[in-house]
Image 1 (tube, rainbow, N blue to C red):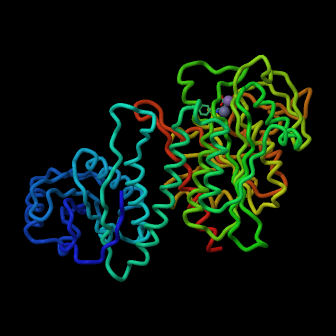
Image 2 (cartoon, rainbow, N blue to C red):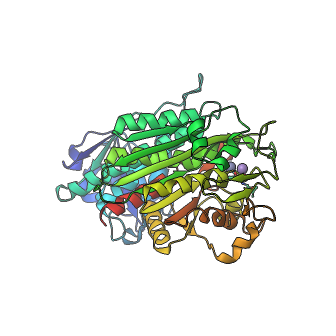
Image 3 (cartoon, protein in one colour):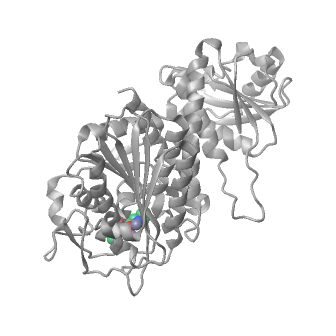
Amino acid sequence: MKFTIKTDLITKIPADIITLAVNDKNQILCSKQIDTSTLKHLNNILKLGDLNERTGSTLLVHGTTKYSRAILLRIGVHSDLTPKEFFKGIASVSDELNNIKFTKIIFPINQFVNKLITEQAATEYLVRALFDKVYVINSLKTQNKSKPANFQVYLHANKLTIKEIKLGLKNGQAISRGVDLTKDLGNLPPNICTPTYLASEAKKLAREYKMKVTILEQKQIEKLKMDSFLAVAKGSREAPKFIVLEHKKGPTNKKPIVLVGKGITFDAGGISIKPSTDMDEMKYDMGGAATVLGVMKTVGELNLPLNIIMVVPTCENLPDGKAVKPGDIVKSMSGQTIEVLNTDAEGRLILCDALTYSERFKPEVVIDVATLTGACVIALGHHISAVFSNYNPLADELKNAGETALDSVWQMPMEDEYQPQLNSNFADMANIGGRAGGSITAACFLSRFAKKYNWAHIDIAGTAWKSGKEKGSTGRPVSLLSQFLIKRIKN
Ligand code: BES
Ligand code: MN
Ligand code: ZN
């Protein structure tokens, strides 16, 4: 997919297909900018009433004079079109495109612009929706490979708004490249996407974007006394890695933003083994790590003038003769002791040491991202991620960024009243807090290791991947975090 911005008259752009917005009154918004015979043909089709009235509906039309086809997209009342409706609309346009052969498509941008959607936002959403839809992972198929999308997209702009459109294209592409990396890492099988593989991806990003990478090996992790992290890694034959990737392009005196990602490349549950149904999906348990690696790609693509540090503790969680057992007590890097009552609550055990490690960066904020709890899926389902924070302004910032990015989060409570659920008779705390409020007690556990800075935790257990026929990584919440960072530049 290649994008080119065009400011010529629409009729001068050579293409075989054009996307046209139609309002609630069956009017084509660009009617004055397209040739009269195409317009006449399309108006006749619209009179037949085949374009559904629901916003986001599409109709593929053949036989227009100027183009071999046109796609009509219902947008309802133009001034009321919301970013979400627009994004979904472009996704349905993409679905139409999947079924036809074409090489060049025009999207006039101005037809989507209103008080809720700026030129820049329209472009960014459009680019992101197209990337999202054309994504395929083929590398391990030898037969029936789906063809990668290979078409030209003309974004039609008027000369006055070209700057905004360029910016929207730049951000949209950078975010999409991050999202694609996150999807690839998530979708790869766990025998390929190991901790070592994630470390090599970090090295690749460091080379490509001139970042500093540090991979801590078992010995160094032991020296740092991350015994909670190492307890999880013990049951696996794959070497654990502790990955640090630094992008320092902000003012030297400015404190960094630290992004921590849970990197369990396979979660069988350990000795507290999971049921086997759908266990394959636990390859996605490195979704937090994949997210922060994807965000670092976006950061590199945009060369953001910020100080950002990515931290990823990564290992497998497997049953084994040497695996950590229920009842074992481990000492975290912070010095606090933890009674491991359930070895399947391993995410918090690796994250707590990463949170303690992050103190050394004297961070402005720390945000961790993790496929942490099944309870989060029960609470919020698959559409919205959960955010927990010890600093409400940070939660608000993330909520706003999520709204803008169409990658939303819902703030969950984290009151002190939940903390006693983690009481242990034998250690400073237990690693589980019972069934009630499971995603909250998991956050409460982490909060005990994040006391020294402003911190937010994003539980993406319900949003990182889709199950069933459409099984695959969603690339979430790369867009949210990218938007969060982009908005930070202005402050
Ligand atoms: N990776 C899982 C959480 C998960 C489960 C994410 C299902 C998405 C779908 C995590 O490590 C886990 O197993 N959590 C346990 C915690 C429990 C033992 C307190 C859970 O949620 O069941
Ligand atoms: Mn688990
Ligand atoms: Zn897990």
